[in-house]
Image (tube, rainbow, N blue to C red; front, side):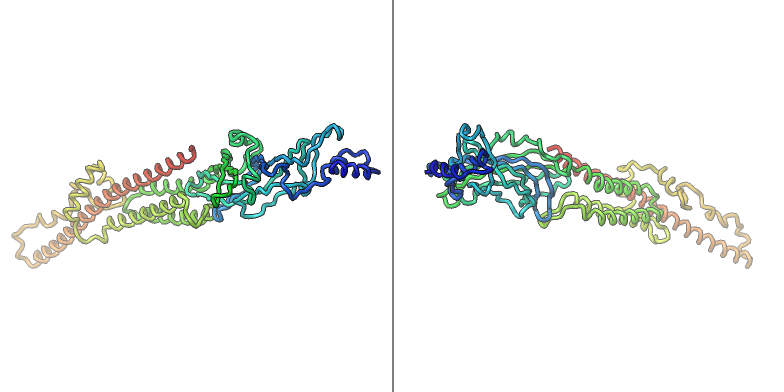
Length: 449
């Protein structure tokens, strides 16, 4: 019947299409074709669709909405048993392009689709004389992906593209790969490798699953593994923070009894606050987690606050005008004896720190007020004039002795403040170094995995 229909079409094919081979072939293939029916002669035989995927570009990674936008080259081919011809009857034509809308097409789609991308429309497919249909097209894929940003900016993301027939079971449509999994995994020939993300590999797995333990469905899953290039974020986020922390450590070398240290650290704290405001829009944000670099910035801010607090306390401690009582004995024992040995601080350092910008005497220095009145003779004590002079000298001596005692107290508190400043500085320095080494090691491991 098909041959009779084709003969009738040939008899009507006159005029400008009389010698057009492709027109004759197209009319031959479309004669009696039913595109709504799966193209097999034996309904028990399933149609095997071979698919292939090549990643062309990573367009966008939306961490907040957990969406990945990629541009891929998608290829699929299958055999249509109703679209077969003999090339010798059609001027040795072995393949022809025909509209996709005129033939049967498998209903294979991507499960993770969340939005319609701006894909170019390809209205044609290639058809071979053996019935092999090749449907090649580029697709902009907008898919849902579980993005883990904890390792930002040294993160590696793994997103899946699952191809399957939405309706047909494996008895009707089965899926296979056009190439080997190794070829798919290592193929980066068309990838645009100049953006923020680097394509590591594309893994492919085939699986059959059932929902009701009766009908089984076939799916081909492609795992697209990409890695972020961290250079931009390292230069613009990490290095400025590191420089500010180094300047905070350098600030400890200012004298502990000077107010310039407090002003310097307040300036650093304000500068770091402005820095965090600037970089807040650069950090990725999700509702389920915070990147480690965000925790790093918060800890650095906390360390700056602790450093400022330590400087304020030390300045308050060594400010002699505010001191009223002597240093307790247990403080002298722990700080001036035990801590000095532990920190390898010698007494010469105390005299050097006391002599810088201070009028406090070091140990062994003589007080000129101690010998006042010692040269006066007691035999003249009966004179009213001499009694008045002695009372005045006694008052002056008591004043100088009290002032000398205040100086001694101030010197002791300054020594305590100096030792505590060295101790807290070393503890702070060890904390910053341990924290920096830990984060640096983690980021290095993540980068090299």
